[in-house]
Image 1 (cartoon, rainbow, N blue to C red):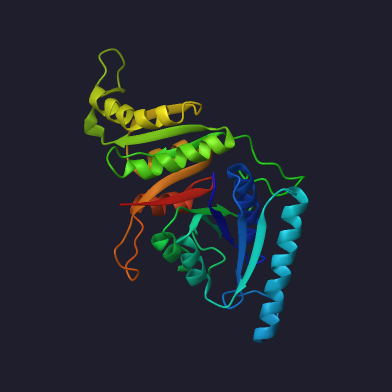
Image 2: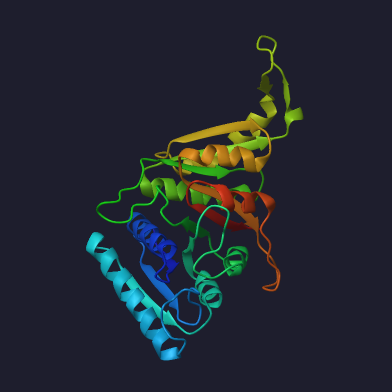
Length: 290
């Protein structure tokens, strides 16, 4: 596997956790990692004067410290740093044209804001040309040094709507699972009318065979392409966001999609992506598709 893993860092706990996640991902994918710091887009609480030179020096310290910590843990990691004058969103979106993956920090539940300040992170997630992952500060699914191992989780949870759009999400999910020796857990949500009463169990339902068959057909070519990756397909009744969030409880990563947009002035994340970004208890990957 090749392709850059690009992560935005700013010295905050969220940015640091994102950098650790990106480093582990780079090792698993055998991909180089680039740490990017925008000295013109720093957290509001940076304890330095507002002069440009002071901001640049702060950024250099952040990059050097993060680089040293990651290389101390992952000595074989191919790692580079960039201190940029461009805004964080511009720098990351430019990288997304040639990167395999962008990684952003997130401050916590109820907020998709990252080191990018406020809604800029949503702008990047909505326009990135490659998959973008948000990582929450202190996420138990992320190893952050020798004394802070990741929780034991193997599932790459992916929301699947059978059709052409599913391929981009499944390719990313299977590739990630293969890199980590994990399992793909493909979730298909269906509306309640898709259930019919079970003749023997009051208050429960039986899934329509056609719905399960559609999910199985969507997974079939990826099972064949990645024969070593365990796969579980689940068809569950209920709102897509609720179904995905329930599955994500024990996930290593949750994967959702968004449509590409023809204009850089237009960006939008759907309601499912918004809900998962705000509430998933693990890192979230937003994968663009046609």
